[in-house]
Image (cartoon, rainbow, N blue to C red; front, side, top):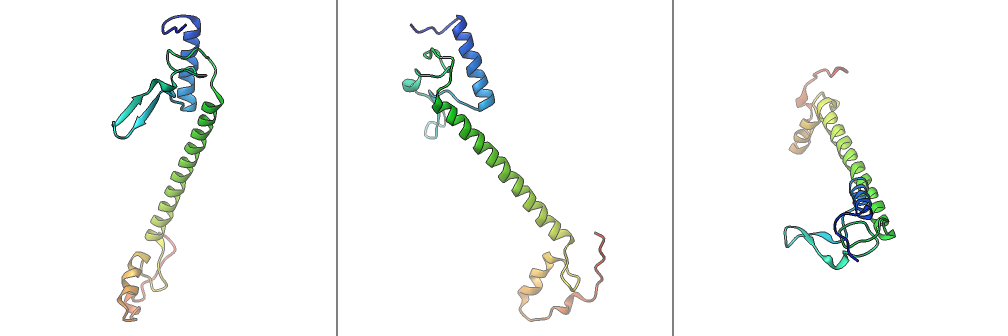
Length: 135
């Protein structure tokens, strides 16, 4: 029978479903994001099965498919965080180079592209300004 309210198994399923959603970022298999609809759509085709989501489920365990989804979500989240860290590090290196690096003639490297881009070969326009090691 289908029990949608009350009962100890219903509360256990709710607890397991809440933990799976908050810790493993698992969503109920009966809901998905639809771009044409512009939001979450509920499809009850997958409402019954070995999962604790929804009132049509009678299980307090999570299927191997959902466990694989949790593992995939974890890997994708870690990769996304690593890419964000790398992007920040590259931006920091570029900012450092623009602020502190000079060519041999004392021009900042951000100004060097205008000197090289002239094409007249006159690189001595920078004069003999000293470049001290302190920034």
